[in-house]
Amino acid sequence: MKKLLILQTAFIGDVILATPLAQAAHEMFAPCEVHFTVIPGAANLLEKNPYIQRVWIYDKRGTQRGACGLWRLARQLREEKFDLALVPHRSLRSALLVWCARIPRRIGFNRSAGAFLFTKQVPYLEKHEVERNLDLLRGFGELASRFKPAVYWDESDETRVASFKKENFQNGIALAPGSVWATKRWPRESFIALARKLIDETGATVFLLGGKNDEALCQQIQNDVGPACINTAGQLSLRQSAALLNECGVLVSNDSAPTHLGVATRCHVLTIFGPTVPRLGFAPFGEGHAVIEKDLPCRPCSAHGSRTCPIGTHACMKEIGVEEVFKRVVAIL
Image (cartoon, rainbow, N blue to C red; front, side, top):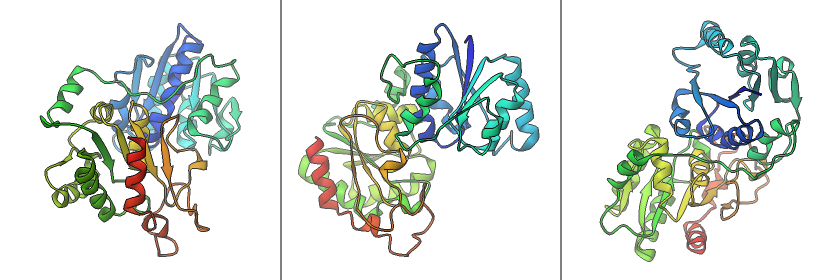
């Protein structure tokens, strides 16, 4: 294999969980060019990755939306003469893109909506997403190393992070209260109480992490907690957020992208699961991390979460107490 393409145009967390696939492919087929196609919001994650030679942007909901946008990108990819496409994303559009690009070997999951367009279908098994993605390569031989999610940053990213740290910075603890899905969010009041408790009882500096969509939520939390709680939501890039997490002891996150961003650093991650469950494959990957959840008969209510609780109680999140989470954080520290 002289050149291969990985295509993952789902959410940011999915892209992070596909980074081990890039490293594994780079090592298995060396010397080989590895290219990666993502949505615009995820490109920043991969730009410094030493195992990826080029990042392609697929703005499928913007400038490249529709059949015309897909066809234009497919023509560009066709000119690259890829030998192999690995498609962890299970959408028809992703399968159609690599087919239209005329990549001769196309490998994806049998549960993909476009599985019939692949030259090889791999069973989508109940295991962690990292291991599931690596299954796309296992047909070529044994993987010599154990791979984990990774995000790389540079000195300019570290300089930006330094501007958020106070002179008395110590015991950095990060909280990521946001999620695309409302039912995946531990209540705001719980995050506020946890932040206060961490500051008062451990002397920690608490950082709030998130994207532009989380700015208002994180600002409300910071306003209620006070100046020892620092809001970075919407002010740091994904790489910069990873650089900040690398200096924190623990991240408390909902089941969302920050969980996987934390795993890609040396930070320990505690993920709060509500409507979803770890066995779906999206728990924090590797050792030193933990999850907290309530065993309820209504869980899981969906694979991704929803806008509202189907039974109107949101008990899966509301029954997880602040004291319970605090003790778990202290135990990890």
